[in-house]
Image 1 (spheres, one colour):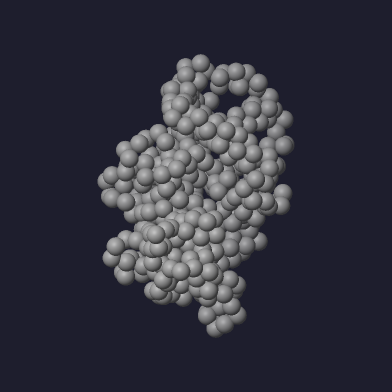
Image 2 (cartoon, helix red, strand yellow; image 1 turned 120 degrees about the vertical axis):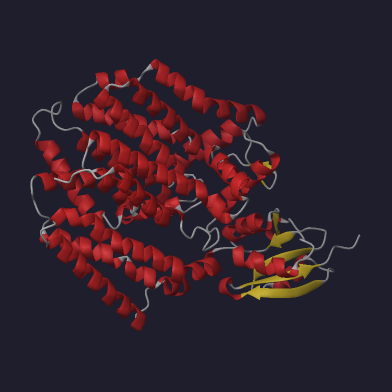
Length: 534
């Protein structure tokens, strides 16, 4: 049986792991996608106005998401200044809080598995990815995870302070991403009560002081923003929650089975053993004759792990970040499984060990080839591929030998963390420049800033939303779109796909156009356009 280590040693280890996996290299590449620069800019505008209520983008109301991330980013801006890495800081802090909460919960209620649960959660691919993103997904996952752990702590201890904390953190989850937090928590608790055949559990959870705490934390902002902008209820609740779930309004249509591969990838490198834990724990649960007397924690984790993918598989709009709250349940279920195997003095099956080693070591292949993948969008069959594969096979052999030794499951955590750390370090070292050049607006904005001494207005034509929002953040100014008829009358700079100058000339007939430069990695050119004649 694994014995709990000294708290100071564990704290130092968690600090080092979270510091590297979540915080190191946050500024190695610029904000990518549409969401990161958009949310970072919303927070900047609120920060500039000292407005903690109304989110805006380019000065117009932006009511898609609640305010928790914006508040966290504003706090980061006030301490460190406005930057892309400061915009990512809230997610890194939230992920760290989530890992620490898992450690403390397990140390008190499942002694001996606390370090496994915390470190495996921290090193899951989905957690690392969203902990390094300026988005609402990690704030939701962290508050939701801490809230559910508080609820289960209340169930075991009967301490009302834990139940009160559950309501507070679910309220924060509602401030992170909306009604999904209380709805998903309710689904999990009801399903767990059904599995335990304990319907009184639902009534006991509905604790009036807790409900009041929830309202006290969550509702003031919702009321304030509705008063300030009467369109909030229609846009946020009706469009961005109900319509997003029930229709493909925002063009995120994916097949019903979409979250099966997403979940497998999000749990990497722990996928193989997490599935083994799910099968083993689920089988043991079904064989139990008395659902009221068996250990309930694995049952709770199974329901928690499956609820988000099942619920959002019903949604007509699907994005990977929706199932991030399920990842901690999967890693804690694995930690529980490992602890039981150690207690029974069982060694991992060879087939599981081999598959796990291949998955864990295989992370190094895309990490080493990340530049090729970004440039060619496929795995190239070159000498570099074979070298990367050979390195991965050597790592897989080392992991296999470690797990097949007398240490068994005790070696799983350390053996698996090695390729995770190596893969992330490789991506940050080799892939960051390519990520910056191919997916971020930061290098283009820097190139334009080098020649634009007057900070002229900026416009775009037939470029992606990702570039538009990225330029808005890095230039800190609204971006006009020619194709929407938003052609500035004053002198400005326009960014277009390479070869689009004739189309631009037709749109600004009679105005002088000067070529300023090009950004080859994204096949873009930028031009100076003189003011229109009056």
